[in-house]
Image 1 (tube, helix red, strand yellow):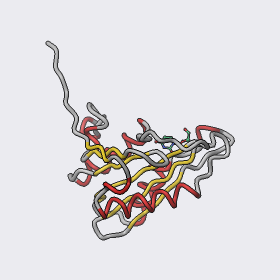
Image 2 (cartoon, rainbow, N blue to C red):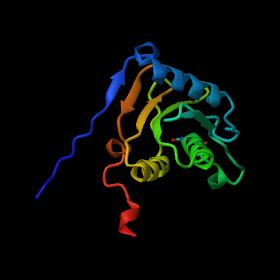
Image 3 (cartoon, protein in one colour):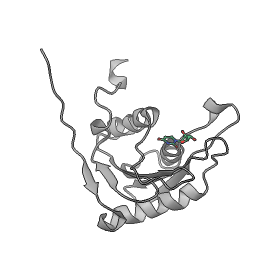
Image 4 (cartoon, helix red, strand yellow):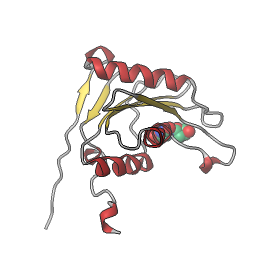
Length: 158
Ligand code: THU
């Protein structure tokens, strides 16, 4: 028997359409993007994680001559958040990525980052809002990692 899934997402046509708190978070992600170490791909990504206590933890992609040793911006940010504030709820993450030529298309989190984010959403039993964009242009928002990663692998199976 066939089944169909529906995912929910919101499109904002530009930065100005974002709600105030998301604007602030996206600004932090843009600032973080400037400090990306993207020596090999030239693709710079910035991320900012908003915690319930108001703290913002940022991250940018960190590349390495041994390519798989590098890490994406989202995981740098979310691991920092969990290391510094292990008991805090993660409310949202904003993400922006661009090639040298400004990317106008929303840059969505890679599969490994989706899996990492799912760990924290399941652990805290509260959904994480995810906002993502290119250098500018449209921003996509999902209200849960479950909309980006259906059938996610969940530790309860272990
Ligand atoms: N990258 C991220 O930082 N986040 C993603 O979700 C996608 C990819 C980085 C990894 C690498 O440094 C560069 O972008 C090109 O893949």
